[in-house]
Length: 142
Image (cartoon, rainbow, N blue to C red):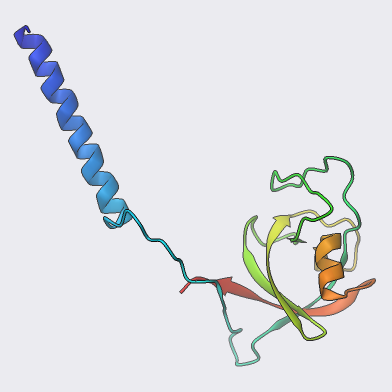
């Protein structure tokens, strides 16, 4: 082995070591976090606890319908469309005594007069028919 090959090998090993240390620093050294806490509801400021909004079903998905969040919808998809909340935002929706944890899957509404549109499966799970006033709030991990 020549001196230049040995120097390159040592340099590559040093780079790999620095990368490994950086990964451990960013992940906190925890290789197995295992069980994560379930998302918790975030109360609304002012003590009311919930926001209100009008919501309705976005209807059955078209064949291979893709959302603005790059998801392909099926008849079993559970989620909401909201024009402002970012894709993947976790929220709780409450209607008629049922609370469901869901997420934003689209940022484009299909019908005017609504703040949220629910996938058909989510609307059925909650019992929402037509446009109804729902309650919602953000979810967070503790």
